[in-house]
Length: 440
Image 1 (cartoon, helix red, strand yellow):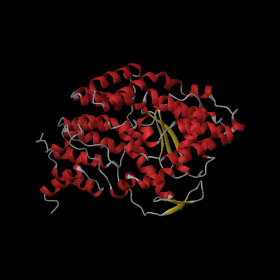
Image 2 (cartoon, one colour):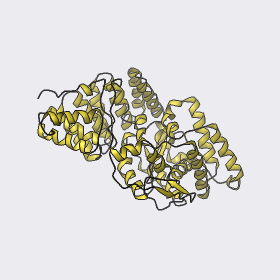
Image 3 (tube, helix red, strand yellow):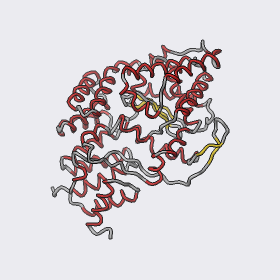
Image 4 (spheres, helix red, strand yellow):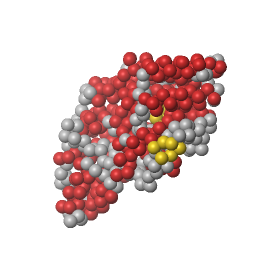
């Protein structure tokens, strides 16, 4: 094995995170809001909304530990969502609805209509009307083009148009990065809505669900659950409240709207029994999901020993849970126990071979240990399952450099820079290419 490449920038005090890629396209200006019929500042065409969605949503789903493997539950979520989507202002969008394995409480929409709900929120809701309210709310963001509008206004669109590499500063530890490969750290890909956006989405969401035959009580129940949960376990809702500002005022508005505008639908069904039947298997492992929430909070606080204990509790309830296995791998790596961390990452790969994050973890673990050939294999496997992550290209280059394959490493570094990446990784790649004579 050759001498390790210089890795001062990727020490335990500075490593790399999943990065956002670039999306090319011609910018549009103003557009007509499909809901209000009024002019709306919009830098994305419908085609660009769909393109960005198709490129970025798979990476968010993977950061949330992949789509849940309960095909019956996923079909139920999608069936419920599609029933609502047909009644919206943009019924021709390519909607999809699915659950993801993340433990934190959230739901989100990408601009082309890809909508996901986490296991953390699925185990908190009590009936199908609440699920319809949640999906209706996310559909409203897509229909009112809030998602596209907010993404064009914020950092996200800057990253899409110029390329961005997420670089960690000197104060960020390697272990802290590993804890953010999924869950809360994934929220950089999501649009952050204004309070006005949220109010409009609440109103539209209630309209859609009532049109679909549900009681407006579903929206009230959903809002009430979120308000109560925020006081009992605020860390579990950190991402949701950062992207979906919540307040008691929204709950009070939902109650008034249900009574004044949709009072005629008060006796519509909420389908509690059907929801409980469909989520029965998931609710059996609710203690594991709660333990994962605890563990992620402890990882964020750098209390890695307690995080290990929490993830251990989760695995006692659900021994083959993919998300819990990956989280345990992250905790063990943070504790400086890479061999144990690798075993959990490999077990996660065996449990869910078509999901990418465990492959990334295995690669990072082997790269940190100097096993460059194994790391390269892992990053290449990740790239086959989930192509389009510029950081994987860089990590392949780093692995090839460690193996002494300078020409192949230079090719990866050049590819990485051509993707518009920035930050410490880009500076490292550029310095290597310049040192080796590929750049003058």
